[in-house]
Length: 170
Length: 170
Image: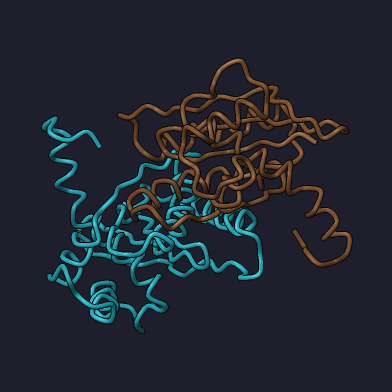
């Protein structure tokens, strides 16, 4: 299973591909970020994000997109800016026929670090360790994208079982 | 000039087309809203909004999309949900090569009602009067979409003059 983790923002979108082997071992074949020019109008920046995400999906053919759910701890200006980019990411997934799995920030941190309120640098270190990366994933947005993909990797077997048992339609 | 006003949301997107005659007289050839099924996943709802907006743009060929700017008076859950739909609306504009004009809620209310903090029903009444509609535009989302289009109609001559003078690149 190949998971595309996304951490959305208008200025920068982090992405991380996480491959789950049959053994359960995790690997990250690719990660990085999409940056948009600060001077550009918002609609052009969003169009750039959409285009790059479509390219990423076409080139890598992931099985699912993993993304953080709504969060409420930031101010409304941040939430709106994140929301715009998140909407475009979800649209890119829908247009590519890619399923989307959503996790709360708490679930992501809990899964990756064992602690739901872990600081940024601990998430980066644990992502590096779990994926055996040579260096810490930078910037934060990339680490967060890989983290939500790792989160899905650990939840996916349970979600599948629940879906088979008819408990969860996801 | 034909202006497409948009009031975005994930559950409901209001839209309103406002035609500005050479005499400056305003008319609304069409208005309405796009509703998305509450039980549907967010990515599907956003894809539906995108599709309907693309159809609207193709069928009516507006000259510009008018939309409210970021607002900060609501909570972050609302801002994120609005942000997602707003991102998709801006993307539809970018993909159709349609320019986007943004106005603050204050500018919209000031232009339409003469009072920047006018209540919802006053906006509805003034939109009805200015566009000579047989009934009040309902729901709020439609009135707000028509209002931002009216706002652009009154700002557009100034923006053009500024652009010609090289003051504003928009």
